[in-house]
Image (tube, rainbow, N blue to C red; front, side, top):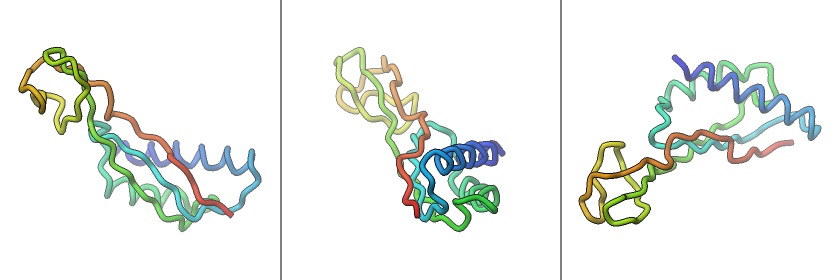
Length: 113
């Protein structure tokens, strides 16, 4: 379950930011997760709750924001949103798409005390 290592990475960032900015508690942490990131959200929620124990983010609400998959269509030369990496272009039906986004996961922001 790689969600546990993702949660550990989030904890590391929270601890670094708490030291840098002097906050003691995170009440809300918002993550942006691309549709191609391969993250199982229920598993990440569970891992987040477990890994954040004893940290400033213990008990914090985790909000996950879905980001769409994005690609450039080489047939119509337009950027498009896609649901699947192998999907055809939703504008022209072309099959020559280069994925350009949707595999990211990042902390958007935190509400802290």
